[in-house]
Amino acid sequence: MKRKLTTVSQPQQKKTVNIEKPLLGRLIKWTVWIILAITLVLHIVYITGSYRNASDDSQLALVHHCLVFSLLLIISSFYGLILVLYYTARKRNLAYITAALGYAVLIILGALALFGAMFVIGAVRGIH
Image 1: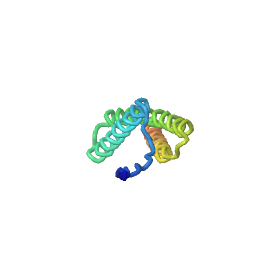
Image 2: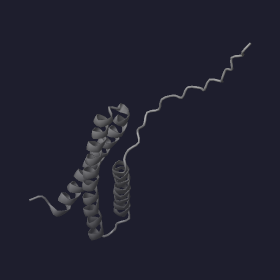
Image 3: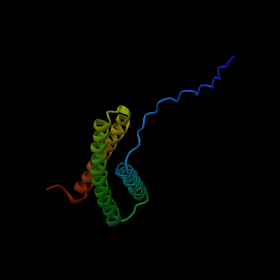
Image 4: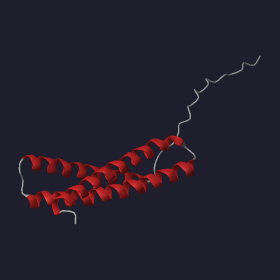
C-alpha cells in the first residue's frame, strides 16, 4: 500500500502595492524638503531680527532670499506634483494621491511666503 506524502502548504503571501518612486521622484522630494527647510529658517531669522532690531539692509537681504527660495519652493513643488500625477496615471495606483496633496499644500505655503516677502519689499521701498 502506497502512502500519499503531503507537503505543508505555504502561507499565501499578501499582495503588496509597490509605490516605489524612481530616482527622479526621490530627488525632487528631497529637493523640496531642503528648499522648504531653508525657507522656514530664513523666515525665522527674519522674525528674530525684527524683534532684535537688526539693520534694515540685512533684513531686506533676508526678505530677498525668502522671495527667491519661496519661488524655488513653488516651482519644485509644482514639478513634484506633475511627476506624482504622472506616476498615478502610469501605474494606475491611487497610493500617490497623498503625495499629490502634500505637494499642493507646499505650493500654497510657498505662495503665501512669496506674497509675504513681496508685501514686505513693497512696504519698505514704497509702492509708486
